[in-house]
Image (cartoon, rainbow, N blue to C red; front, side, top):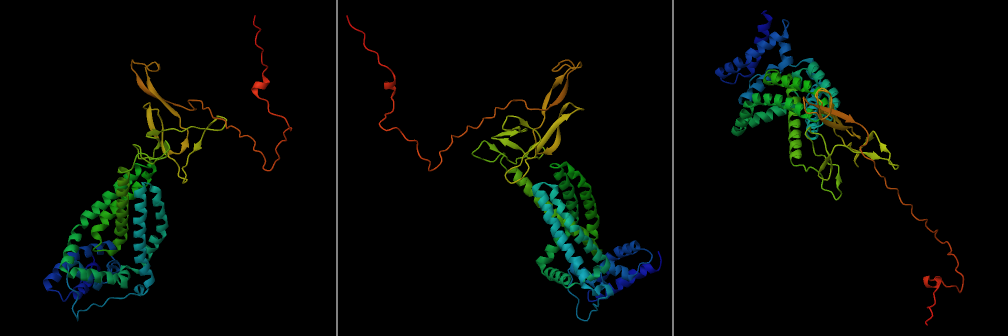
Length: 425
């Protein structure tokens, strides 16, 4: 190791020691011993040209870093007369970039939670397409973080107020116990985040097979949060990883819980006065179902007014939602029925299943094996009722046909001749 590397750490720690000078010497040494290995590791990571300015870029000024150590350790604020001068660099004088980096992080975290909740409660990965709107904001936030440095972000008035609020909360005995307890849960939280991300991806795959494309990104996020979570105390820039991922986990977790509660308590079909209802109960694959009364429909046939069957008919409900249900087909390798995705196109082919023997005879019993055959067409003829034409209506104001005067309508008795009685002898 070159002489510059330990010098950068010693200079940085010297300023941290000065900022903590009002604390007992033994406690100061204990604090420095805890952070010294991490600083040395970071210096090696930065390379042979590492300088104190590089450490400030990663961790903030030694004075702000010492203030965070005070807050996390539950120590009182610095006493009067203790040097707390913050080193200013030209980059830190621009507040716009630092503020955009901070509030871009907050905005993206809130958006991630919202879109993850939508995807979880609807069990539809399409809701995550809204994340594309957040990508430019998050990229700019990272760019400003890199160009302005974490020290400029930590020196913002809003960031200082947050630290002061946490410090005052920690000064209270109950608050100190609460924060200490929450701090002890951090390792479990990072592991829980990773587990929820993977389960969330698998949960979406049960409904939409193309969610498999999303799974590698969720696994990468799970690995990133497990790696970055324990290191945030030494490198505050890693908050731009763990905060968005944590927000996504919280939103997706609540959305998934809501979806499961809704499915457990959902009626298999909507009560209706008519026997037909397009309900959204789920089948064994998590897809929607069509029901006629209490019976599940797997096919629908449509005819025109002449009784001719229609093909490639797409069904929608009154709100414009496609009535998508599971499509089945024959699996040639096994000769059984298999799932073929979901759509709202009807009618579907009929699946004829049975067994055949080694000679190809259907329904054989010697050496039989399963077979499946798809049959297109309509298995029945539909008699479409013809509409009865309504009698022509009489135009309003038309005169009635005149009746001949003095004439009386003929009656059945006058129209039939009467016979005289036979003569008696």
